[in-house]
Structures are given as C-alpha cells and as structure tokens.
Length: 358
Image (cartoon, rainbow, N blue to C red; front, top):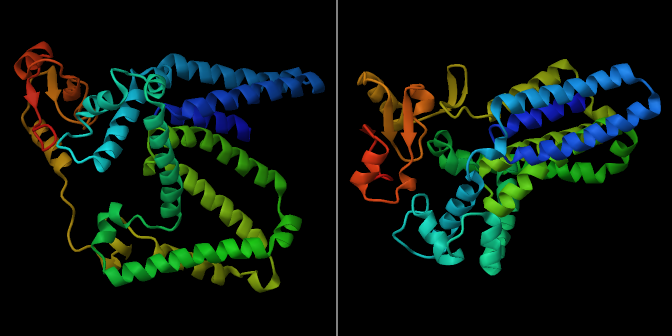
C-alpha cells in the first residue's frame, strides 16, 4: 500500500513539477514488474491483481483527465534556455534581460536551436561547463538549505537583528554537525537496533525523488524549489538514524523532557510573516510588512470590472490563476513582430506594465 501511495504521489507531483514524471514512469514500471512477479509466485490473483488494476486504472484516469505532464509545450527548453541565459549574464556583463532575451543569448552560444539535446550537439563545451556549474550549485544549495541559511530569501529573517541571526545560524549548523558526528560514532548501535525495512523505504523514496531532482538541477539550474523536497527527505533520514544512534538510557526522555525539546524547536522556527513568534508573543518581530505589488495589481484589475474576454499582456506572472477563466495571459517573450502588430494579432486589451515589461 505504501508503494501504491508513493506512485500516485509522484504522478500528482508531476502535474505541478513535470520533472517528477520520469520518476513516476520508472517507479511504476518497477512496481508493476515486481507486483506481477509476486502475483505469479504466490498465485493470489484476486488481492494482488485487484491492487495492480486499481493502481493502473487510477494512473490512466488522471493522465486522461489532466494530460501528459511533459506535453505542455516546450517547457523544458524554456527552463534550460532562461536559466542558461541567467548564468551567462552573471559571467558576461550585458544589458540583455536573461528572462526575456534568453533566446538571443542562447542563439549566440548554441545557434538557432530549441531543444536541450540540440544545444548539447551544437556546443558540447558550453553545455558541459554549464552542467558542471549546476552540479557544484546542487551541493552548495543543498548544504545551504540543511544549514538553514535562507536569510537572503526570507524578508522575515532580513528584518531581524544581525547578531541574533548569526547566533541562530551557528546554533543550527552546530546541531547538524553534532547529529552527523553522533551517527558516525554510534553506527554500531543503530545498525543493531534500526528497522531496516523502514530505512529501505526511506532510501527508496529518496532515490526516486533524486531521479527527478538530479536531471533538473544538473541540466537546468539548482533552484531551491527543485531541492527543497530532497533536502527535507535528507533531514528525515538524518533524524531517523540519529534517533537510533542515541538509544541509550541517558537519552530516554520522559514526556515533559520531550515536550520541552518540542517547545524549543517551535521557538527556533521563524514565521516568515511575523518573525520569531509564538502566537502574539514575538521574540524578534518584523520591522515592517513587505510590499505586495502582485496582490495590489490583482485587486486593481478586479476593481475595473472589465467585460470579458480579456487578453492580458503581462510578464511572468500568471494573473488568470487569480482572476478567473475570463482572463488569458499573453506572453510578451513570444513577440517576433512590432509591438503594435503583436498587440493586434493577440487582441490584447489590458497591459500590466512593470519593470521587466517596460
């Protein structure tokens, strides 16, 4: 049942992050083959066969209803090209915007190509150099997440006292190092006591997540939203090993000791909206609320009460998700003609002008 749920989870994830579809296909192939082998050996056709039919039927139903996750246009090329252009712009000072002018940048390196495989064939050196940089970033960003150094990406943490931030970061890093050292030192203890069936399941889950994460991060870019799931699973695996490495009379906690440690963990966990708070009591509160230009734009568009259908020209933000089906976003990066002609061809009747689009 656990592996059945894992397969459906990978499929559901792939509709949000298409890179997980590869993990789903590989997992489902192995799951079906192993289940068929078990079915033939045991002869229990009814329970095992029914479970297999339900798994395949639900997967086919979701694919028929929602479509193949990887068939949504040339999304993989757009992801590769825009992130390649981003790294290229770091290394080559330019006035080009990597998010909107990525095709111009990639054309200068790979020529007139529009697939990842064609880019590899056109300029293997540049492609492999970019892959090497991504591999380096994969390990750096994973370590960054595990060490809790998300300061640059969290407005709540930027508003806090720098000294308090540094102390907290060192404390988190110290706890992580201490846990790893204890696992290595007490490996004979947890090897004797651990439930290897549970450990095997955790490792299988991690392997199939990595099957999605590694190609996306190595080829495209080691973005934090690619890495966060695998970093969480690494923390779970580390906690599981540590819990068995510390199975000693000195470490057997009663309920109030466990509650105290749980409270400490809650206190060390920041709220990105308020700061370090428990309820209304804040140890370090945010100095100011962040600007919310996207929310303000959505509220302004709603207040206009425009007649549908509305073709909305906007950069990057999928406003129709929040505004409803009467709105359709026109992507400005697809413009291959003059501005006025582009507006007329796409029947644009609303433009969201921001820094990127201007």
